[in-house]
Amino acid sequence: MNTGQLPQGSFLPGRILAVPSWVFPGTLAENCRFLAGRVDEVGLLFLQAFPPAGAEEDPPADVPRLPLRYHLHLPLDLPWEDPAGAARVCRLLREKTSVFGPLRAVLHPPPHGPDEERSLASFLDGLAAGGEDPRLLLLENTPDNDLGSLVALVREYGLRVCMDMGHILAWGQEDLVRRDDLLERTDLLHLSAPGAAGDGHLPLTALDARGVALARRLLRAAPREAVIMLELFQWSGVEESLPLLRQWLESSGSP
View 1: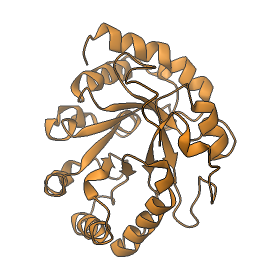
View 2 (view 1 turned 90 degrees about the horizontal axis):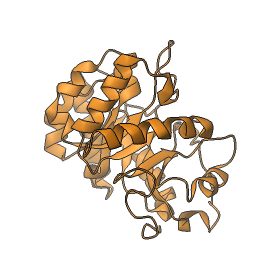
View 3 (view 1 turned 180 degrees about the vertical axis):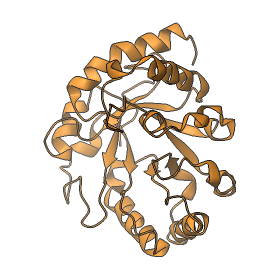
């Protein structure tokens, strides 16, 4: 992985800009080649565990050497009824993508329920037993889990947080912006507008006044070193959102 050619703030004032590895219909390699020189970091999408989806078996040799940083988004359909099996899936995925040198991995935690803490703890122990460092995981707030009940586990295992603004707006999770115990651990911000039908991953220009206020508040509250990811799946949406994002960052000084 080549991270030296892109100083922090190449595309946003003093911040790291990330987008997903799918911003137009095409292979992972085609998307990454397009994104090199346009963003700092790419989130490699592996959203299905069975079968794995989102990448070629053997990425072309030039792709891991592009001037990009990488992180993983782990599958959404992990078998939480079998935490050890879920950990094996993620270990294999990390091995498969090791050539990219991903810096961290985003995880959707198990849904709220009586076994959520036990399932997640067993999963984390399974990762550690296989040589993976659980501290490289970022737990994302999801429609099924706003992370509030997992704070003790987050602290115990030294986990970090991926704060998803679209989920906050779509699923009424505004209390998260007052959770300093989670905000201070935020290493990645997912920014998008939710749309009328839920988490629509729309450009930031689609935000209403409530959404704009929340976005600006998150940018101020999250650690300055947190990566800002426009979680948009069309490059035109990224281009549409960037001027607004730059304006928010510049007007707020040091968010």
